[in-house]
Image 1 (cartoon, one colour):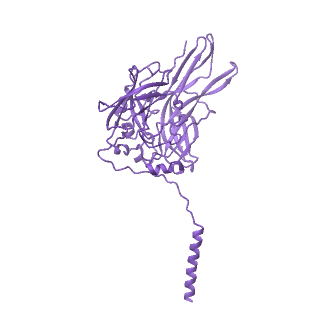
Image 2: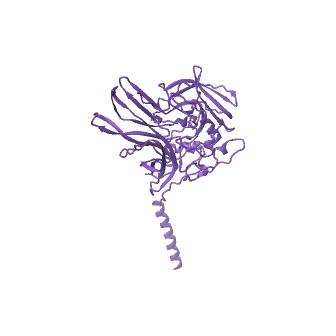
Image 3: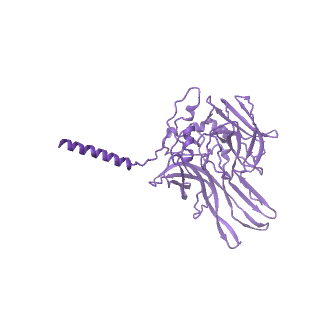
Length: 447
């Protein structure tokens, strides 16, 4: 009897093993953000600077703040300040009296990127206020990118050990139904909206300065208003630029930064990309050469040609236009970026590079490189005040007073950078104070 019972148990075990082998039970994987711990720093390198622990300033809701300002580690709920761009676009209305359109105000069109791992259907709630009064509130559906879902990069990640951030971005979003009539300084609050729970979390606050440029139609003596243009001035950006040292290109074919990762390992065939804000004249392309020094000593650059090009960066352009005919008058403001390149190999020390054409210096940039041949984050980036994407570094940019490529410039050292983020360091404040005054900063209506 005991033997029969023992055989029955053994047979049951064998049978259950056979069934489980044919019908395996799969436990669904749950995507969990893979936050890297800061690497142990070596005294002779600047790795510690790039993984310093500091929360994102002006941001009450950063999680994993120990990773908030690392240039190469994964972060969660941290805005990419270099990606943020706000456009003020007119809302049109038919004017039957003049048989044309007139504007009735403007709406905010944002471009945003939030670094971190987020569920599908997440987005931003964008709120515009003036003196505490809410003027506009819109929801912007986000495009979520998660490395774990991207098979194209799985092999490369394992081979090269990439650690670029997951993210959610918005490249265009608007609410034309409710026009904003007010102009001047305003607050913009950015809330992350969770796609699973609809919970809203404040992630960034900005200050924008909206200007109106009235457009006139007709001829002198018979003028009538057309559709006015609106623009958000960015003169405070002139003191800074950024370097992308991640390999490949910062811009994809559509002209949008990091619309999709295109990262490739740095080789001798790649160049480090430099982006510098400016308000251009009519030219958009400059064939310059670059001169660099390290610790005050000039270095030899094998390929010193540096093409400063703004013609393909329309994503960053913001224009104001006023015109009339007989006599014709037109005035335009454009805020965009110059793009240049630097050699891949960076020797340790204090770097200074100038971009020159026909004996004239257009820009001078400054940054530090550590003993590990990696760029040291700018103090404003190191302390977590501003945050940029993978291997992107804030740099100081100096505009010579006689640089002919700038149509307008205006020193605004007290308004901060990246739409009102206050300067926190002496280095940042000093750079902002060096910006020269050039041209008429805002359009002037013709008489």
